Amino acid sequence: MRVSFDGVERRGAAIDLRAEPVSAEELVAAVRDPGDDRVVCSPPQTVHERVGLLHSGVRVRPVTAVADAARTRRASTEYDEELRAVEAELAAVEVPDVDLEAARERVAAAAADVDRLDESVARTSGRVEAKREGDADPSDAEADLQKATRKLAEAETDYHAARETLATARERAQDARDARQRRLELQDRRENLRRAARRALADDYANSFRCAVRALPVAAEPVHPREFSGSDWAAACAVARIARPCAPLVVSSGFEDATRARAALVAPVLLAEL
Amino acid sequence: MLLVVTYSRAARQSLRNVCRTHEDCVVRRFGRAALLAGTEFGAFQALRLREKHAGDVQVERTVPLNEFSDVPERVRDAAAAYESRDAASTPYAKFAAGSPHPAPESLRGEEL
Image (cartoon, rainbow over the protein chains, first blue to last red):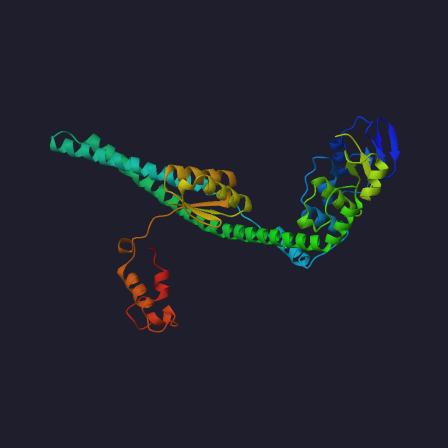
């Protein structure tokens, strides 16, 4: 690993940067960013997201983290093949859009138009009747009635067209929902398989975890990751020790110097202040 | 009432949260779906979910079925007769053939 800050370049597997004006968070970001040439190192894997920054407030779920560490050692499980198949199927699921809002709005607006014009026809028709009964000239009112009736007929046509459009769109939406349902089933299946794989990996690497806890300067019972009751810090260090190969770990507490941290964690180490 | 059906993990979680937080407007819960009360508040919750998750939330308005006003007598009679048939293994198509009851195809073709 090679790091350069403030024009000073340093190489090695245990580098103390506590005197440099760079924070631990910034360093972790640099380790994870292949485009950041201040830190040149091997690329981090998923486990780095769990234990890449070891500080006193680190939070880690032992089973998940041990499983990620196991993956860096090319560990596999009986679930992997199905998991890959499910992921491939998920990637192939096409989910069409099911937005019917515009079609619903058109139906509602057209229905309101029909109601409004229906009332207008009734009113105008009443006026024609009144004029006829009162022996007045109904021709103006009759013309209005004709006009209102024509408008109503047009609105009714629009309304039926809108309803048909919505009905067709609803059928399409139903097909789209089948695809969405399939996607959801696959996602659920994927999560179940991932969980099962994590458990299997944690079982397979339980012994490595116990050995790592024993080898570290931490006060914690060396037990199965599922039963681990020590600090998150201890669990994270043990996980870091299992992972191989590992991108540099950024350590901000718990070790006196970089060399000791590197020896305990069996990984390249950058010491930095948080 | 309003039937809300979800089609993604995030939408399902949001529906669960709504059901937990607003029990008063939840009539029934079924996994990734729920029946919400037919009130403006029920509609508010349903629309909120649709606003958040778009196509991953389906909202339908449901009404109770009154078979005496919504379903023709011949269909009601057929259902009652079929459920009191002698042999449980008889499929409905066979049961209807040669009886006064409607064939399944004719039922499928008729909207309520």
